[in-house]
Image (cartoon, rainbow, N blue to C red):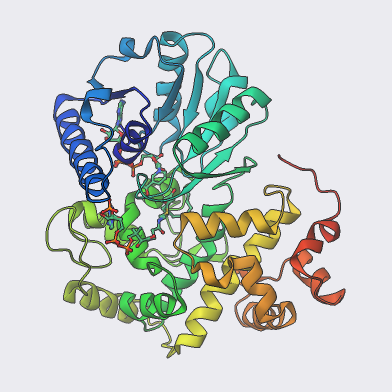
Length: 418
Ligand SMILES: CCCCCCCCCCCCCC(=O)CC(=O)SCCNC(=O)CCNC(=O)[C@H](O)C(C)(C)COP(=O)(O)OP(=O)(O)OC[C@H]1O[C@@H](n2cnc3c(N)ncnc32)[C@H](O)[C@@H]1OP(=O)(O)O
Ligand SMILES: NC(=O)C1=CN([C@@H]2O[C@H](COP(=O)(O)OP(=O)(O)OC[C@H]3O[C@@H](n4cnc5c(N)ncnc54)[C@H](O)[C@@H]3O)[C@@H](O)[C@H]2O)C=CC1
């Protein structure tokens, strides 16, 4: 269903058919969408405007055949490639031959999803951000076969929904989540080394993020990353026997999020994650003594050397890891320029806008400083390759740190995925 997405479409007066897998989920989804639309109507009335859209523009169904007349479909099932393919096989047989087929995956391969359809040129990633009815970003992910008409349609859809759309290339986790991954890794290492979720979140919220990484993971749902890691053989029963708990393929790995998921702690939706919440789906994050105890036991079990972290260290580890991946994204031609990465972070991840986005922020810190800190960290932690300074960062520092608008020239001509 994708409740936030359905709400966004209804708010924009686009008639929607919302499909679910069973009657219970359908009822839960219907209530949730209704609640969000009522809230929207209240806000409009307060502003002296007409209440706008109601549930009447949404048709709820369990039957794929009801999608037969849809011009555009947005799939939002669990983050699992086989399931996504199963859904796209059904869509390609049920929908009109010229229907646009969009996937709201967080990072799965668009081309592989498109490969099971009759018309791969009509398949595209439309990546929304949680809460999807609130967050302004739409990351539009083009696949190898995606046509210009399909891209234009997805970009236009974003505009109609009042969102800021950014076109990106297809690679694991695209742009936003690709940068997020080393940022979240660093945040997790800090927990291993003595911090608590609230310490790390406070440092990043004081920096200006709307939510620190742990509150954000609890909001999005810890199961997304977990499902992705299980598919990639990093977690769950695909991990080869004898693999050290804190290592994968010779690199440092933090299993804390997996352990939380195994304990049924998926975040706000289960009322427990990195924090505890007042109820299932609650939003008020409170530090949880269970988590504190769990972390202490984990550190003892693995005899992890404790490293007291100042807020400055927390910021450097997390933010420079994120920025470094941004340079790799530019090298790989996945984003058209640093400005696009900044727009993604300002509109999709609650980045403090007044700091201009992560790439602009790096330029204000000074690329040489970012490079030096990354270099030092990587020398001390060669098992964390995401901290190895990107070639582009080194090059920009070496040529005298040109302003952001000149970075594209320095990137040269990558094999653009756009
Ligand atoms: C291969 C797979 C990828 C793996 C890569 C590794 C990554 C690991 C996985 C991570 C998950 C990835 C998921 C994904 O694909 C991308 C994401 O969506 S990441 C999440 C991005 N979102 C954020 O970062 C949110 C940041 N927070 C904010 O911007 C604000 O805090 C927020 C807008 C949520 C709230 O604003 P605030 O001013 O703090 O509060 P208000 O009370 O004013 O609320 C404004 C508005 O928002 C509604 N709201 C608040 N909290 C929630 C909530 N918890 N859930 C839903 N809605 C919420 C609130 O009701 C208000 O709505 P109104 O209608 O205006 O009243
Ligand atoms: N939660 C988030 O912050 C974001 C999630 N996404 C992506 O959206 C997708 C869904 O994630 P969530 O919304 O978190 O998951 P969720 O668990 O909240 O929702 C998944 C929905 O899919 C339904 N579903 C499962 N199998 C189905 C089937 N065979 N037919 C019809 N419906 C089926 C489930 O009933 C459920 O309502 C994933 O690909 C995720 O990566 C993308 C951006 C943000």
